[in-house]
Length: 284
Image (cartoon, rainbow, N blue to C red; front, side):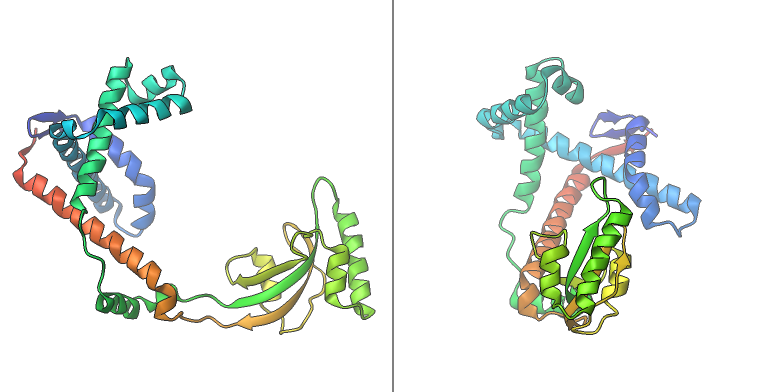
């Protein structure tokens, strides 16, 4: 399939490159779809992506004069700081700085077009934010939490398993003898910067073998010695918080940001649709 977009020829290889770029994420998202149907849809999406990029590039070329030369030179200087000249030319497929400037101007122009398409968008209203919150409460739900501290003896190149276990067993002996947990932590833990205090831990945040222990402790209860991939632990739980949905005020900033992104995406889609409506697109 060869595309002709406003007289510009787009080879099939370009579309196939887009297919392969999208494929890993796409196949994961639609793994339950019939393979033939999935491949057909992937090709359609890739074709549309390529057309949209070509149209935006063409529009940016028309507005090339709107990009200040100083801005182009500033970007070129930064690129030269980060990359060797030959590496930069190879990456951009350029033979000299003039070609690099042309590419930079085009990219800046494309960014400017999309930014202008989103210019002046109003923020979401209070009612809209409230509606979003009510319809998406579950996505803000926090997992169960415990406030926990632990004694840990790491197993690594500095300490073998037998030595680590012997040390944490001595810590356990002191606990059994009635020494308070906090004093034993200070004496034995390898987590010296926090005194073993991990603060509130949300289920799903830590190693599974650690959570299997601490989320099954009662408040004030201390575990026995247990092993994780990091080493040996003894943990104590100070407080528990059940899974909960935060109040609107606590997540309002996240909602406004999410709605703002949706509005920008819609504005860009409308801008691209306008370009498509005026374009001549052929397949040969």
